[in-house]
Length: 151
Image (cartoon, rainbow, N blue to C red; front, side, top):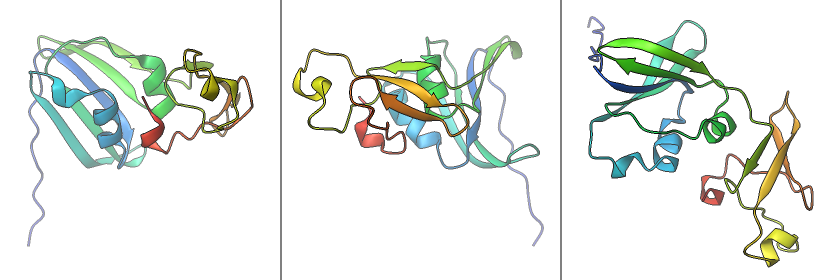
């Protein structure tokens, strides 16, 4: 049986979140609450990529403000393409942010931010190579793979 290629149409105006690590598109979709949008959102999973082997991508036919620090924390290899009139007018390559605030809750029950509920949960990049974040109060490592910890 011959393998056929799936054709995905371009969007005229909106955002393409590209180069998502294969399998992580639903995590980003859920965190960004894209189900709440009243526009077309396409999730394309397991796309062949010359650079990464396989990747996911999300196409949003709407312009919205994205928290690039959060996306850089969830997947720093992501590329954000801003589309206007069918063409890319801006491309943003993300990097792990130096710090994140109220993105992940500290799991340490004795941490001051777990006890004082009005206190912000702040994590700083401790190891850029391994993308390790630590709580500024107790040094607990952020569990970025545990989506349930996200706000």
